[in-house]
Image (tube, rainbow over all chains, first blue to last red):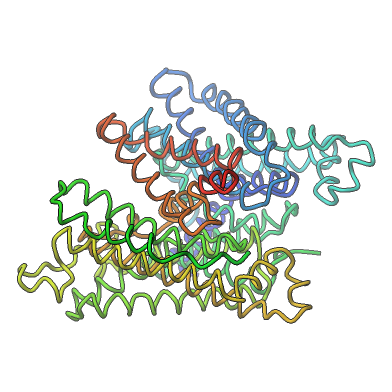
Length: 284
Length: 318
């Protein structure tokens, strides 16, 4: 096999791992609370700035900056839920989406005001690893492994804890669960917090690979929504697989064409999938 | 739902007054604000035509850009006048709208899903424009070729006053389209569809056809506004005439003003541009983030407390 194609394939898998985390977080919120957080990628952006600021400006050690980033973004997620989403739970979906769209502007504007539009880089990089003929970026590989661990933790949380079971149940049927004694208000809050934490984790993994700027969210935000919907709402495994599928499409498309065209193919694929299987690729 | 036919006289007087503004020799800056606000109003009016029937598009930037780029490319590469290029741009945008809308409506892609499909379509247009950098200049953008002023008419390059009249005419056209739609059976059919698609279909409303028609009108107005904006600014780039940011801005104007009243999007456009400019004047260019920050807060506030927009406020009083 052509080593360059192999490299593109591997990079696609690694890219999928990066997409997977925010897509899982979005999927969790969307599946449980039934509201699209249009500003999800912007939460990630704020997390990236938090890590950048703590590491390069405040001089914190990197692991500590990562650890601080998670509660910051989780708190943002909770605030978003309490201040914006909760009052709109019974509003038409369009109003909910537009309100979170407003938050997108707020976060972008705030980041521009505080950090200006410069591209900020963490400046940590690791030498590429050599596997036979193939070179792989070390940072990407570590980010990929961390994404897998994060996804596994989420899975275990949803599968083995009482709250996780309640979350899954609410996502299945939001009318019946309150009758079973589950307080949806509390579950929504927890899901938003977990969704925010996942955005924070995604921020830690992305900040080592991408430069931060106020509009960085627009570069991976749309694709995250697509992945989340393609996998099927509330279907974590589906979202996970869809993330790798999109990663591969983009990476292989970029190998044969240009980066823009590869994203065009990915978005086109999404639209096609919405026509063919609107309930998600892996709907039961 | 049907509105009474507005008595034409006060409207005609108001319109004449607007059209007469350049005759009093206002500063260029005032005209510039008026033109920019009106262009935003045209796009917002187009968006609200769909939006008020529950067809929330996050891809109107794409159609805005399709109109703008079709016109500019035809002018720069083939020398086709914008007078023909703008209709061509509208045709391209409408075709794209049908290509996207028909399968969406046919296959019942609604609500969140429709919004996300339009979002993907908007990104596709932005990426395609960027990828065709040989022709479009990529992310650097492009400028329509200038001509000497005495040939300006054919090239649609004239003074601010000329643009004001052109843009005002297009705005009136947009309002007339809205008004005609409002008075037609189609608006009742669409209102029924927005309430309950299955019920509407069961009483014989052709759901796909009605939705497609309003989409075509809406998209055509977005393309018109896009082409005129590019021609007025004499500059277009993927970020300034397409993409999610622009799509959301169009949405913001329409929502803030109120998407259920014909003048709502226009009120929203005046508000948006007014906000933009006053922030720029008071804070200077250093605080570039202030405008989106305040937009965002206002958008959230509107959704929470005033979902029918400013026009909705007037409705209650009136």
